[in-house]
Image 1 (cartoon, helix red, strand yellow):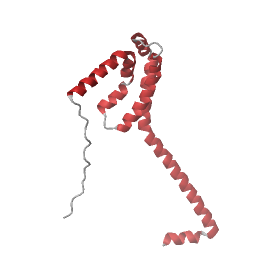
Image 2 (cartoon, rainbow, N blue to C red):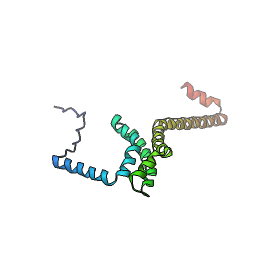
Image 3 (spheres, rainbow, N blue to C red):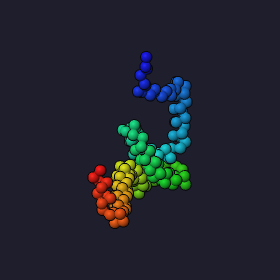
Image 4 (cartoon, rainbow, N blue to C red):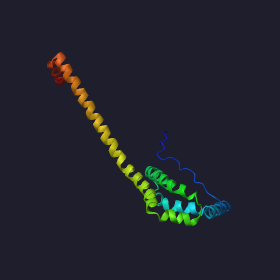
Length: 159
């Protein structure tokens, strides 16, 4: 008897934490937030587009990667300013500057534009390449027709 092929891949095992691991993870997160509060504030506000994509469209990893990388690059520019004066007042000052917000969110917008427009750009380039190749083939056919005569080409077309 022939066994049917598996059509579904087995699901990957999810990581499950016990209660102690969850408490330790929460405690470590609280300590990190308290010790690095200015950086965390800038990261949370700056990474809002990436957090939004994680919450809304988490299955689309390509969009998440593109927008997340560009967004992180924009946030990193502003995050470097916080290390000069590592206090909450300086973090609020950085976030209060409109140009810093434009840098952080504009980088994410650039990632989104590239996500939607790169396929169109590749289609345009491939179509232009195909048209150039067709012109090259037509020129070669004309040279062959001039060299061997038009009868060779018409005989092939009739067969």
